[in-house]
Amino acid sequence: MELTLPDEPVTLAPGVPTRVPVQLRNPYAGSLDLRVFLARGRAERWATVDPAGLRLGPGETAEVTVVLRTPPEQPPSSSLVPFTVHAEEAATGEPAGFATALLKVALPVPVTGKLVPKEGPSHEYDLRLANDTRVQAPLRVTAELDPPAGSVTVEPDAVLLDPGQAAVVAIRAKPRRPFSGSPRSFAVVVKVSDAYDPDREPFLTEVATGKRKPRVPTAVLFTTAIVLAVGASTAILLTGDHDFLPFGKKAATSTTAPVAKVTIGKPYALVDVFPHKGADGGRGVADAALAKLQAAGMPVRLVDSLASDTLADDPDGYWVLLQDGFGSPPAAEQYCAQWRSVAPKCKVTS
Image (cartoon, rainbow, N blue to C red; front, side, top):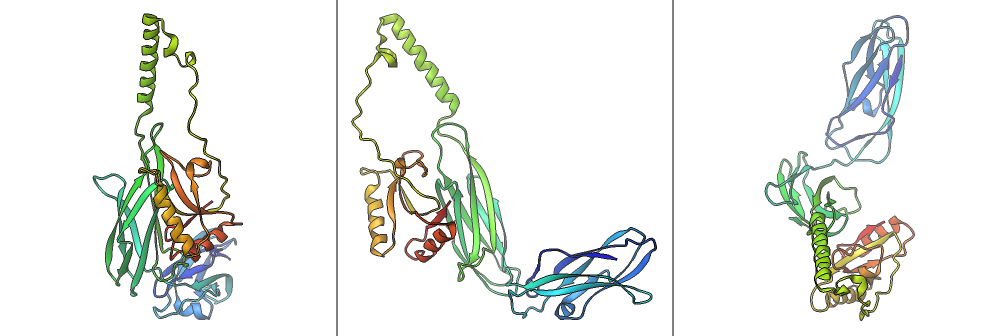
């Protein structure tokens, strides 16, 4: 008798039933009446087999389910525990086959949720959360845009869910609108994590996608170019003045010094971004933020996105606070974690 269990370890949450499929195949020429059970051990006390008995004809395959449910007070553990499923002939008790797999008891995931687009305003969503467990769930909700051009807000960004309670978090995304060309795709990535354990894997990750239309459609630019060309041709025919053509004029002397190129190594930690706005092009706000971080001892530098081929600069460019020179993404992640208290927006870009 051939028995097959999952190759990956089975993860159990305290008090939550987990269904494990077991496939059985009879390779013999005769029929078999079988009883399926778990070997003695810790997992046996948590297990129920459904169905516990079955009949397999020659060459037939069937599936039974082992339902594993630990006690609600069972402490979590990262250690792997083996469990063995046996099959024996129902009439004689003779062993027919067995298979072994691994399980571990993990911390329960105290929240479920779904990201739902709102009716009306575009790029606004409701994150609907629920706590179906018996424990209180302190949660932190974060969101980011991919690609990171624009802004996204979360309200509220911290939620305390009591057992059986539900909540709605408002997500408002403002992806940057391209000036021209085709509509650009974007994604809103929302993560729900343990508020008191930032190093733990997120309980929940939800993604919404969309497209941002350009300010000026390609068709309008094309039509405008045709109108200008026709107008210039008409002016030449009527006046004979070839200065309407671009190649009939002398090239203007540029008075603006070119921006020196800056090289940014990947992966890098993106700390904060300031658009080129205002009388000073946003430099004053960026310099103030840089001085504050440096006063706290944080190693960081200020880069003009127009000087880099790596950074996004649509439409007018940004002042970008970042740090690079990391050997690997984990090293950059460690940098952000170290300085999270003074730079909460810090994230790694590879």
